[in-house]
Each structure stands twice: as structure tokens, then as C-alpha cells.
Length: 231
Image 1 (cartoon, rainbow, N blue to C red):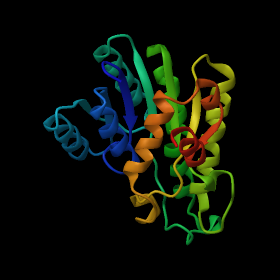
Image 2 (cartoon, rainbow, N blue to C red):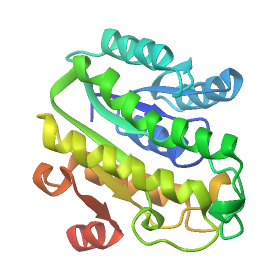
Image 3 (cartoon, rainbow, N blue to C red):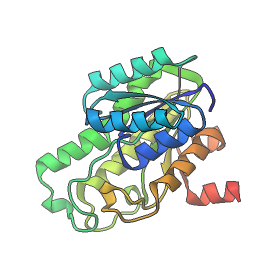
Image 4 (cartoon, helix red, strand yellow):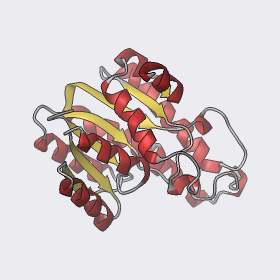
């Protein structure tokens, strides 16, 4: 990853933060964003203190103009365009397993789609003019998008929508766009339940650098594929 540029949204915590840190340890320049300016700047300061290269921007993925500026900044700071886009920004208005869809407020439903679906769409759309020739787009998701379980409300519906965005882009653009499913990960969205977010970052790093572009494009790469390939 030496000299390559990665854009990671939602990088102030959880999977996004760990992906940014993992890529930076491989000498990529990471351009990261979150809604909270102080939090994202703290992450980049820590990355740089550890010898990595990072740029922080306060950006809200629900705002296409914020994302447009994010991608333009990343392109200016890259040698040959953006090499990786990892849209990690996400929200869950409720508690896992305890949030029936019928109980969701309309505002929660709308914001889930604005962030989890439109946020992915905006990240890919605004990155397209700035992508390097061999760029990849990797969208973290989970089994809940494909295997419904009670109590996950509009979050589950929105993740299914995000995966549909991935599939549609995969059929229409020349760059590989795929879903990466690390399983349950211990983040704020899951109430701290699941595996270490650093493990998810390892999977995404593999999907970005070693997995076949054909295996990634329009598909879902998960722990099974990762373990099989790295055993």
C-alpha cells in the first residue's frame, strides 16, 4: 500500500477507525472523515504520532457537498488518484435485537437510509471522477442485510439497501465494488457485542490488496473466504 491513497468514512471509531489505522501501518495515506471534528482529528493525530500519514476532514456522508469536498481533497493529496474507498459511516437508532421495524420512528427510518444507504451511494458517486485505474470500493456490511432477524428494524433494511447499491454499481462501472462482511463486530452499533474491530480491518485489508477483483466485484467476501485464502 506504500504511496496509495484510501478514503475511509466514519473513521472516528469502530471498523472505520481500525481500517484507517490498518491501512496507515501499510504506508497508505488515509483521508478520513466523521461528523465530529475533534474525534476524527484525534484519530489522525494518533496515526501520525505512530508514523502514519493521514488527513482528517469533518464531513457528514448525508451531505453530498461534504463528500464531494472529501474526495477532491483526497485526489489532490494522492499521486495517481484514490486507490481505495471504504464507506464505514453508519447509524443504528436502537439496540440490536430489541428494535422492531414497526416501532421505528419515521425519523429513525429516514436517517438510517440517509446515512447507511445514501451515504454509500454518495461516497461511490463522488469518488468516481477521482479513482485510480486499479481502484477498489469496499463496503462493510453484515449478514443481517441478507438474513432477516427480529429486532433490527430499519438498520437491517438499510444494510440490505446498501448492498443493493453495491450490486448496481458493480454492473455499471469499471471498478470492482464489493461487500465485505466481517460478521458481528464489537462497535457502538452492536452494543459492544462481537469480535474485535481490528479483525474486521484485517479482512478489509485482504479484500483491498489480495482478493481477486472478480471475486470482489458485486459479491460478498466474508470470513470464510478470508480464512480459506490465508490459511
